[in-house]
Image (tube, rainbow, N blue to C red; front, side, top):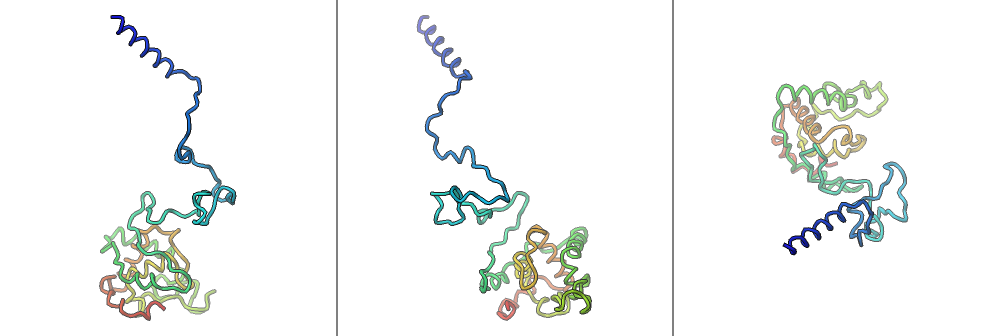
Length: 218
């Protein structure tokens, strides 16, 4: 009976002590950044004494370059593209993108209508509503662009261009066309390309033989 009483008293003492609001020293903390990350303002310059964009300084400083970790996919995003943007003067991945097949094999009527809407908003200003390269910026030579944009329907080069290479160009930009990765999600980019291919009367798979033509990369 006495032993039980002693155990009860000790247990009650530990419980009461554990519920106390007295702040205690947590001891040594291992990798504190795992528990509470260092705050920073998104558009402010980072403190060079704490942060670095040089990977060789990682460890001594916090490496952060405002870019997502390679291979990560944003929440709600899918269909990751396996090729990175080529370095200036290099076309290795641009050429390799010919082998990437579109994950979208077909679009139903509702998806096709949405893809057309996205095309007209983002692409039609240059390539034209009829995909003939005669958009408002060219306007038959009377627009602000002196050079005619690519003729997506009617030009064998673009009709034979594989969907994967189109996706590379839309994602990273090509020549005078900038990247549309911030305007269109990956799914939307593939949908717009599917719309273009439907207008060309071809599919990315049908255009695959053009992969042997290295001149398309130029």
